[in-house]
Image 1 (tube, rainbow, N blue to C red):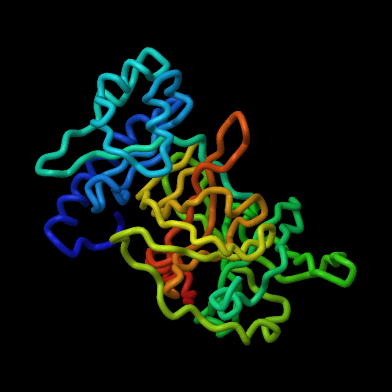
Image 2: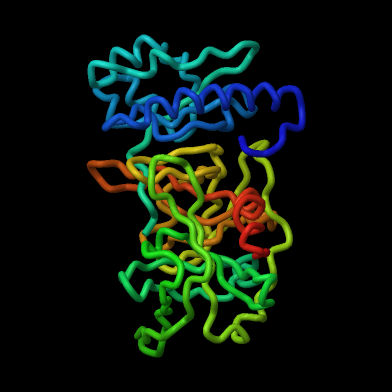
Length: 336
């Protein structure tokens, strides 16, 4: 959890999450990490937030443990017994043996998913989205989705917020839009260029965001500015999103967990909500704005995990807008 604790219970939870982070950072340098992330998650067993580890599904298999860990909701890890998990994991060394022990009534929960990868609408989306066409990195052809309107305080100009990994060459990258035409056609035209950029490039968890400076900013003034952002996770909430590939997501996706850090290889993100049901967003939706149905802006869709055998999405990762605004946008002098 990255928000300030608001009770003794949340303070204890925050301490447990910090312990998990220490364990997590020691094991992610391995070629095959045993975990993809750590944080907190809602428990359907205890009906409260619990410390949470997102395990690497490839490390477990061939037993009831594999079936239980791939349940659609996190379950207490001691439900399976740590030693059973250690025995079931593939490889000579298993960092699960060093998982921290928590005092009090906290119960470590877990679920297992595939490797996280970058993810290369109703009244809410109509109100806040200035652009629903796909956006394209002119240099690489990478496709993404513009999220919400932001304002550059130094110039007063409107820009569009999106995911940074869509533009691997960073600041200055020219951006196009694929504009829909009649007869289901598309016309590619200039949108602007990247004025601010940050993206994960090593094993240090960081942010994944970019601001597009618009060639014609006046065309996007009409969209409403984001007023409220979701600041803390207390229980699951339904969400809504719009992806340039997927279109309007009408399903009531469920806010499932909050990873303080997680990822794989060189890509590690900070402060990501986990969203289900899975499969509601797709490749090309990177940067999509995700809202709680009560109206709060949750953040940007940045990645997902898939089943290796079917390619079906197991989990979606949405980088938190509130802490992104505090830690990144404020330094850029950009605001919602």
